[in-house]
Amino acid sequence: MARGDGLVAARHLVHYGYKPSVYYPKQGKNELYERLKTQLTNLNVPFVPDFTEALKSADLLVDAIFGFSFQKPLREPFPSIISQMEETRLPVLSVDAPSSWDIQEGPPKEGPGAKFMPGALISLTAPKPCVKWYRGQHFVGGRFLTRSIADKYNIDVPDYPGVDQFIEVGVDADEKL
Image 1 (tube, helix red, strand yellow):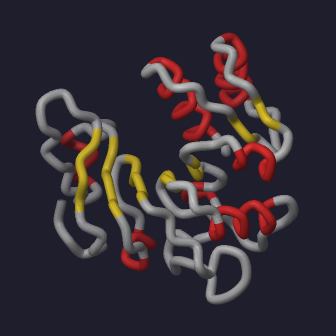
Image 2: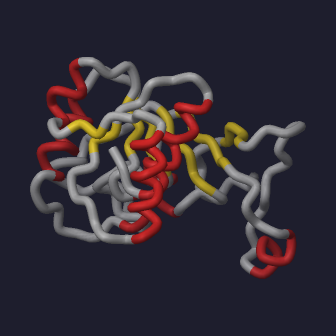
């Protein structure tokens, strides 16, 4: 599934020897997304038109539909996709926030996404407030912040070992990294 982070993840997966496919249901005209799409096309990454069919041959699902840009209400085809992600037995990795979750308020109280709990969550740069509702493996990824920005916003940047780009952390939103 793809928005910007999902498209970038697919590109990285190709370079690490994997064979991702991308389900991209609502393609906008954003120039950055168009460039990422072109890169993936040039790397022979297939864009699949049917999410249900794509699930049948997948080994892992990267949930990057919304990330922290999610705004209610869910509109088609997203309620169906979220419901399928809730029900799949595939491992699911969500980027920044499980899709359908509100960044501040966590999972919806009812409907699609109310029971969605991916097996892993990767918070880019820093955990988002909704992580306090998350139960599973939690990672922080990316060495994106300068010390001055981290200090300005009072963000504890983890000490990444060696050249690693991510680190596993707890899921307690109040926990210091």
